[in-house]
Image 1: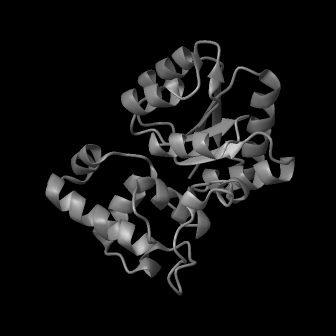
Image 2: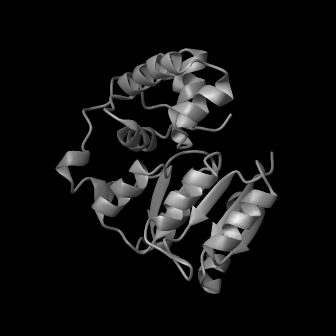
Length: 221
């Protein structure tokens, strides 16, 4: 199925480079480009539910730092966001993941590395730069359980409903929106979230994104 991407970056050359790579990876994809947060919000508002993935630069003419990510997650929580930024500091990466980003691609990486990262996020796999995270002891998860290195979440021993919850966690949705999307009680969702985190060996949602990235876990249907 053709996918729709929204690239939010105010540098035309960067827009073009990202767009060309996405078209190579997803030839049938539809790509929209905006250079300001306000334009991005209007596009998402006018086209609800049509954008499969947002690629966001943190430095925009009308927004700086994590403000743009916070705004998008608050007003458009159903739209998964991957940050594509010149800032490669681990604390910034962690903050963005904490705010609901489903991936983080530093612009300082090599062209081949960025291409590989875009391939992953375009296919629904969260991406977190291991070369950055490995330098932070606080980000190291316990070793993955044997046999979990598979893109199929069923290999984690999760039920179908828990897999549904996992997919929404990987899209950055909070419990209340998961309840709404799956028509489940909040207490039931909390139980499923706990089971998902336990299966991934993660203590929180941020670590769940990192774990999913490390094992190449696909979050798309």
